[in-house]
Image 1 (cartoon, helix red, strand yellow):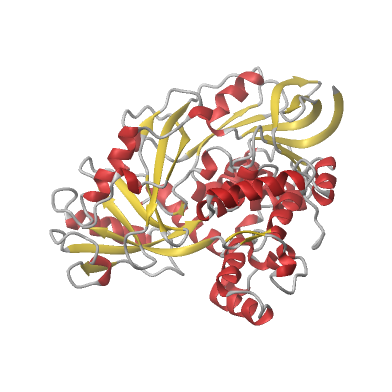
Image 2: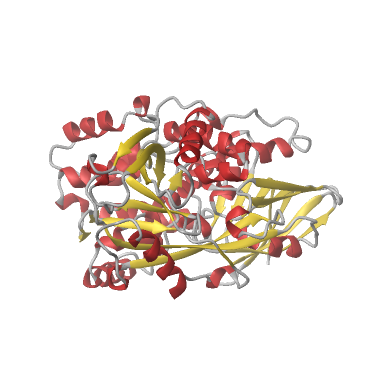
Length: 522
C-alpha cells in the first residue's frame, strides 16, 4: 500500500453531483481528487429521463423554490453546453378525467414565469384535431398544451464536468473505490482500492465530500461517521421503442394514477418512455426494470396514442435508482427532488454528505456545496460556474445552427449526418476528435453508422473510456445503432488494436493518475 498525496478536497462519487463539485472546487484553486468505484455516470446519472427541466409536476407539491431554481438553471446550462443540451417542445394532451384544464394552464403559466425565461418560447394551447402535433393522439382528446423544456445527454454531461475538472488540475480516478476514511491529525486519511488489480493507495485531504448518490449511507459508514438524515431509494425505469410520430417534439401524458410519463424522441428514430417511481430496497447495483413497470409504461402510452405499443416493440430498457432525500412522505412521486447537505465537523476535518438532487440543479448544488466549505477554505476563489462553458460548449452565442453550418464549410468531405453527430456530441472540440483527418478513410475503421476509429481513440485517451460499454452506452449511444456483428467487430478491435484496451496515449493518461491530457491534440 502506498502513501500518497495530500489534497484540499477528496470527492467520492463520479455521478453528476460529484463531478460538478470537483469541477467547481478545482476552478476555485483547490487541489482535488475525484474517485468513482465504477465508470463515470455508470449509476443513476446515465439512467435518467435525459431532461434539463424545471419539473412541472413538482408545482403540485408546492416545491416553488426548487422549480424556480431549476428553471433558472435550465437556461444557464443551455448556454454552458449547447452541443449536448437543446430546447424541446412538449405536448400535453388534456384528459378531463384527470387534472382540470384550468389547473394545468395555471401550472404552465407559473412554469413560464417563475424562472425568468429568456430563450425558450412560452406555452400555447392546441386544438389536437387541427394541429399536426395532435395527429398521433386518439380523437377523444381534443385539447392540449405545448410548453418548453430541454433535452440533455446525461452521461456526457457528467463526463464533461470531469474533463473540465481534470483540465483544472483534478485527479480523476475511475474504477477506484473508497475502502475507508478516518480523521487523523486534523485531516482525512482515505484508503482507496483500484478495482482493476486491487492496488491500494492512501491519500490525505483537508475535507471530504460524500457525493456517492445511492451509496451515500455506505460511505458515511466507511468514514466512521453518522448522520440523522437518510436517503430514500426510488427506482425509475424507462423503455426504448421505435418512434411512432412525426416531428421533433415530445409528449407528456398523464396516467390514470395522476403520474406523468414522458414520451421523448430518442436517437433520431426511437422513443424514450418513462419514468416509473417504485420504492427500492435492494442493492443499487442490481436495479432492473420489472414486467409490471413495462406494462405500466405501455398502458400509459396506449391510453393516448392511436398506434398501440406492444411488448415486442420494446427495443431496450434501463433502470436507475434515485437517491432522494427522505422527507418522510409516503408516495414515492411526492418525495422531494431537492438536495440537502449534512456537514459534519465534529472531528475537525469536515465531511460534507450530499443527499438528493437532480441533474438540472447539479451546478447550483455544487456551488452551494463549496459555499458550505468556505470556512475550511477561506482563501478559495469565488463562485464562477454560472457563466462558464463546459468543454466543447464554447460556441459563439450558443448558436448551434450557425456552428454546424461553419463546420460543414470547414469539412466539405464529411457527410452531413456525421458532421451533425460530432457537433452534437463534441461541439467545439470536434477538431480534436477527428485529429487532423481530411477524409473518411483517415478517420480509421468504421464500426457503425457514425462511429469511426478516431472517436474511439479519443474517448480512451481523453475521457477515461476503458470498456466497450463505456463507449457504446455512456460516452455515446452508438450501441443503439449497431448490429450484433458490428458490436462484436468493435469488441475485437478494442481488445487487439489497443493492447488490452490501452494504446500509447491512453496508457500514459492512466499512468498519470488517469487524468486526460490537457493538450489540444494528442
